[in-house]
Structures are given as structure tokens and as C-alpha cells.
Amino acid sequence: MNDNYLSNVMVIIIFIAGIIWVLTNGGKYEGETAEYWFNAYDEVQAENDDLRYAIDEYSTALNEANDNIDYANSMISDVQYSSTVYELSSAIGNLSSIDNVDAPY
Image (cartoon, rainbow, N blue to C red; front, side):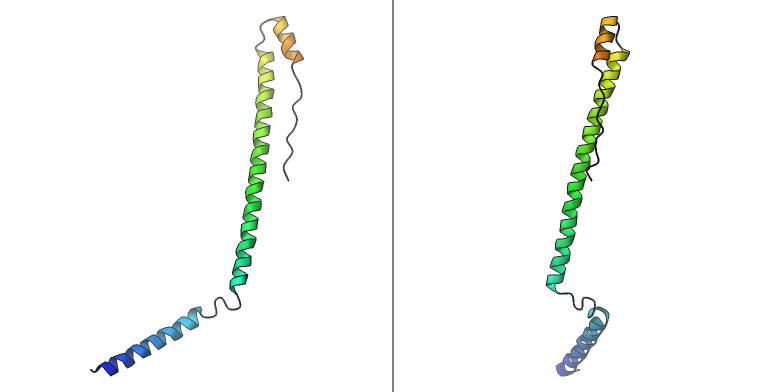
């Protein structure tokens, strides 16, 4: 076989591979420009930032609610474990209502 024959076969193989690639992938992103992908990425990034902010807000609200529960449990414990009338009177005098924590959204 000569070199000219091998190069012709290689050209035909590459041509066929190119046609197969175009048929399977060529129209996949038709009409979607770099600007489209940038805008899509930008929208997803903004949504991601909003979700991270919401997570932070809910985490803060959860911590505040847990702190309120701990404080209420402490007041209840003071009343339950009072050993004298004076301690009981003081513990009852320190009782107060605990505020609810509103949902951030």
C-alpha cells in the first residue's frame, strides 16, 4: 500500500467520524450563546445566594428559639429545686413569659 492510499483512508475515516459527531451532538446547544449560559449561571448563582441567606436567617431564628427554651427550662428548674420558701418565692418572682421566635420569611 502506498502513502497516498493510507492518507485517503484516514481522510474518509475522519470525515465519517465528523458526520457522526455532527449528527449526535451538532444541534445540542443550537441557539444557546455564551451570553445565554452566562445569564443562566448568573440566575442560578443569585438563587444560590438567596438560599444561603435564608439558611443563615433560619439558623439564627433556631438558635434564638433554643436560647429561649434553655432560659425557660432554667426558670422552671429554679422553681422545682427550691428548698426553702424564700428560694421558692424568689424563683416564682423571676418567672416570665418567653417570646416566640418569628419565622424569617
